[in-house]
Image (cartoon, rainbow, N blue to C red; front, side, top):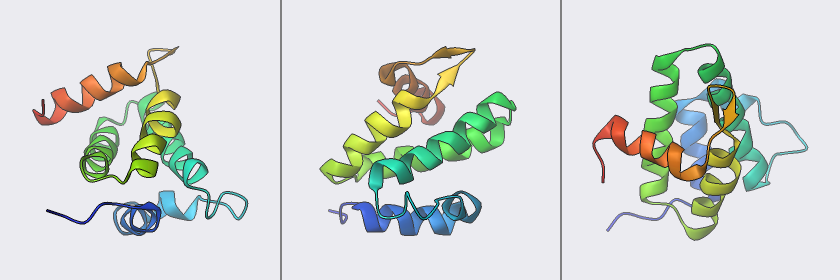
Length: 109
């Protein structure tokens, strides 16, 4: 079984995969998992708004990988500070709708 992804590992993976997003985590947010996760959510929302499908797909793939191995605090942050902050078509998406989109994109059930 793989090691669970805790906050430190999430931030390290974020910096590795999306250094520009990790660099956007400001001093006030640094060390606070939900605020760090919200930084990724804002970047994903910007890609959704810009209709940058490649970036949205890459962010969804990343968050899906994180969620598969997430420690309970990281899983909570994905649900609360990532999925609940995404809007599609101008309306706030429910976390279940976003999760369905993730599953559809990557064939997971």
